[in-house]
Image (cartoon, rainbow, N blue to C red; front, side):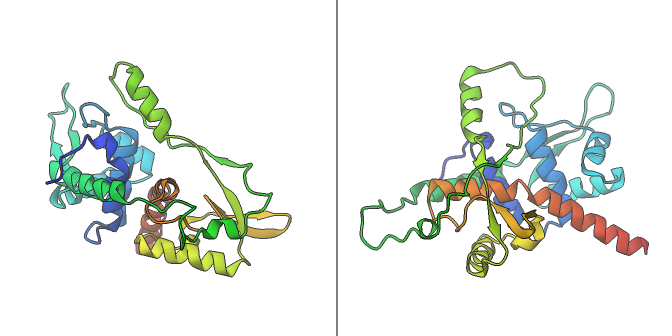
Length: 252
C-alpha cells in the first residue's frame, strides 16, 4: 500500500492529476493552481488567502472564486474549513485522498528506471540534432510564497533543488517533426498542444517555440520531471485566458 507523502513532495504530481480531471473546469483549476503554488504552507499544508486576494491575483470576480472553491471541494481536491471573517480566515488544504493519489503517481515515477546510455536499444532522440544555439535564455522558477513560517535550513536546500532553473531553447516552427513529437508527448500527458501555451517568439524574423529541449524527454528520466514542471507551471495562464474568453463571449 502506498504511503502518504508530505504534500510538498508530491505537489507536481498533484497538479498533474488535477490538470487531467475532466470534471473540474478551467476556472477552478486556475484558482487551485494559484492557492497551491502561492499560499500552501510546506509544513501545515494549509493556506488561508482571502477571496479578495485570490480574485485580484487571478483577475476573476469574488463570486467566480467562491464557485471555484465549491467545485474543488465537491471534486475532492480541497478541504475547506470556513472561517468567521473575524480573526479566523477560511483555510484550504489539499485532501488526504488527493495527496494519496499523488503519492501513488510519485511512487510509479520513482520506480521508472531509464536504461543507461551504454545499453543496447536505448534511443536518445535529443542527441540527434543538438546545436550550439542551445542555452542562453533561462526560464525563471515559480517561487512559492509561504507565510507565517520560520526559516528552515534543510527545507531551504530542498526548495532550492526543486526550483532549479530549466534552460530553454528556441525550436523553429518550421521544424515540423520536432513540433509534432512535442505535441504527441503533451497529448500523452493529457496536456494542451504547444499552440495553447503561448510559447511563441521571434528570432531574426523567424518564429519559434520556447521549449525545455529540442526533443521530448525519455519516459522516467529526470528531464521528464523538469519538462512536466515547465508546462504545468504555465497551465494557470491557459485556464485564465480560457475563462476570460468565455466571459467575453457571454458578455457579447
